[in-house]
Image (cartoon, rainbow, N blue to C red; front, side, top):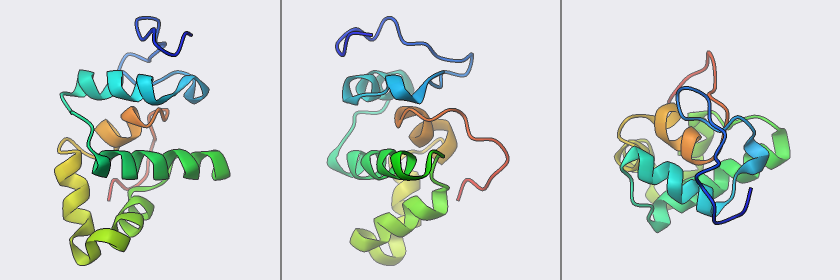
Length: 109
């Protein structure tokens, strides 16, 4: 897929990428647009953490890890901030925008 062509995104029926390897920042912008989110530096802080975690572990980061990462900036307010950034949930929006397959059967935070 061309890095600028988001019309050819291969997603499952819920809108998650079929192949996380097809993810790039242009894809993230399009997936965020579909979720009604305009990405800010804080969104990118979470998304880049998630992508780094995925690269290192080959699985999506549980919300607990993303909250711990945000705690470096927001301290005790990290969990609240995560759900302000992704109001419909970590799995529904953050995982989707970060190009993860839909996680199954684990905590959303």
